[in-house]
Length: 323
Image (tube, rainbow, N blue to C red; front, side, top):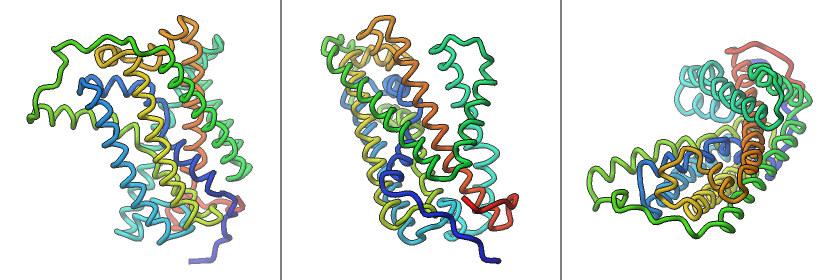
């Protein structure tokens, strides 16, 4: 294999932490609390399964943090880990699956969600597909200036997202406390196989909500100190998301109660509507718009590093490495 120029090492611990959190926190947290409450019905179990999901995500973060110390500066992160641990064929399937299905499909879905809420927020009559394409092209343009530019935009959007979620939580605790008690019909049965099945079903939307932290490893080659910054960023980022998710669920339970959370599909919107009236609809549209844009920014920053690593292995189109 011929020698390749090294990527510029421009990112630090703060960048890594924001990229980890940005890869996890999308739009799911604004709906998934009710999906969990549909399956388990007491505050203890609702919060408990979110804690279990967070612990599982932390276990994954610890494993990937160890891999980051063993293979520091590996452009493509998880793609390289699979190639080295198993076989190049496994990495080949992963990389092309990422391009053709998982990452691209997820970005397309979130771009459409962004376009829908952007229209609601601004009142423009533009076609949603055109808005989705425009935001993706804009993020492509930003990332053409390099990892530093893309990371700066991603960090700014993630900080806005944290502020918006914190505001949602504060509003929930300020106006909550009067939610009705769950009816006896929703009380959990004693420990049984059915209860275990309900907990298992609740873990599905939770696993979806906690997914995405591994994409931070894609930019390992551009970390100034990947052994320290990437490994610490994984742990700090996942820990921060666990705190945010538990806070959101506590706020929803405080305002809506277990029965109200079970009876809605838009818990975050309901919390804001109770607090701010119909004006809250525009506020939650802004929050979801920012959250969707942040996810797209993180994906646009990280995913191309896998395709870059594939190109170095002769599995993708060759291109400039001056990034």
